[in-house]
Amino acid sequence: MRRYASGIAVVIVLGLILITYFELHKSKNIEDAFREANVPFDSILFSIDDKDHTVTFYKFQEKVSFGVLKDDVRGWKLLETGSSTEILSEHDINWKITNRLVKPENKNGVYLFWGTVNNPDIKTVQLELGSGQKVTASIEKAGNIAVVYWLFDKMEDENPFPNVIGLSEDGGKVYQYR
Image 1: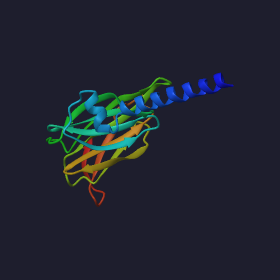
Image 2: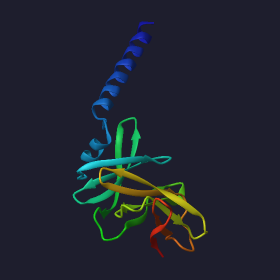
Image 3: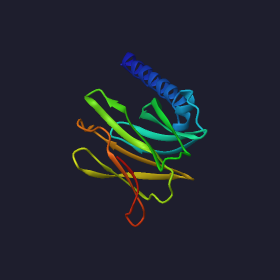
Image 4: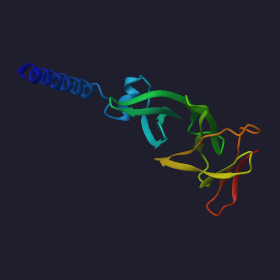
């Protein structure tokens, strides 16, 4: 019986040591994950949650970029970073499409339409896909920076780039790509 009790005590002590180790080596927040990955940033703008990841938009110098993170038992881990776009641009909407959120079980991955909205008259961004479907992208403001984004599962084969429409508050077209 003593041998059994001492075995349980050893398991408990080892468990406590492991918990302490993970807590000490855990990235407490998203900023820590960027620092640990040696990714320079001036500020974190905002984050959005995907099914399996968190996409965090951040500012570095005069550019906006994004990182893909995962939160697990050891804390936040930066998986990868995407390309960047300039904050101040002559374009009303400076946008990109990326498939940085690739999932192994899905060959096509998850795609991200994103960019900066540089024209203050644009209040809504609509995307018209090759299938004719229209979706509204989200616009998040972080200080004086407006970031537009939309996550989607399938790239339209016949036309991978959507018709991008910037609308004013009253619904008038301010910007159109295509």
